[in-house]
Length: 114
Length: 114
Image (cartoon, rainbow over all chains, first blue to last red):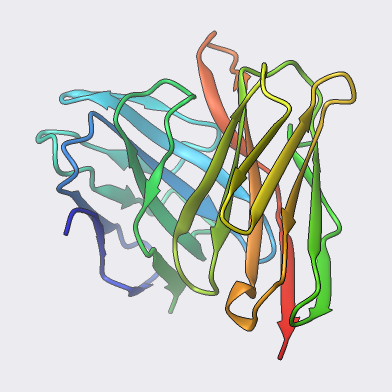
């Protein structure tokens, strides 16, 4: 079955540590996205990528970095510069970056501070 | 504040009753999408309605769009306990870079009592 796989499901970060969240899709989608969700809140866009080797900042990119070396993969690194990283992180993909495309989501990674 | 705002924030009904959730937005849109999120999971796309459509159906779901009032509603008929989830509307807005992007509201938490 086609879909999006996020790993790990739970992740703990120590002070000053960078951590990387994995996102892989086998839907052959060009566009991929990273969102942050805080309790009882909607989704906020961190980064998005329209095509391989290209990515753009979203609304809350500070303290995060991404890469898009392969069409299937869009890892997110939460750096030590992100002072409040505790949240639920969701990766999504769509056929194209046009806003009339439904987005397909993974099951998220919950990041906590140790 | 966010482009799309759902109302009510929380809704509790009995199985078999209908559930209605509303979404209001501020700027003109090309389309509006509704998503569902089970607790601790990713979002699942339910339905997309274009700005030139007034109503759309999918199974027990009925979505309406009133562009003059900048609002949409999601109706779930004959609700089931399995419909318990958070429901989000997403609207396409033009970002500072001129790109149209999906913006998610903060959601309606629906509890269906068996």
